[in-house]
Image (cartoon, rainbow, N blue to C red; front, side):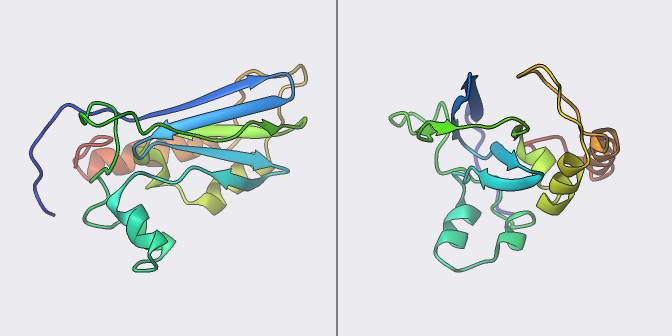
Length: 158
């Protein structure tokens, strides 16, 4: 993997949900997944070299997770460039919709079909918006943590 000089940088993903409206934004390679009826309806697109290559048709979505430049960000907080925080237009959300906000240490390890299976089998809270954990989240979290530890890396530091 190519070495890149260390520089202060940060990534962010945010969600604002109020009533039946939601808006989200991100910069860098953290992601937001929006689930409806147990399926991923939308996900944010990374500000990374592999995401750009995917958009250009040079690689497949599966190749992003292991691409040698997966941690080369094209936009982040602290890169000295004007703010490139990408904000999604406000949308209507429905009862049972769910959001997953995560770093690349999670989504590089957990496939989208696994996320969908976890959320499809989960029971959301009965009284509005509050954090809830799919039944499979513990197993997924354990595998993610183990994978990162055995590979000798920590999230965003490879």
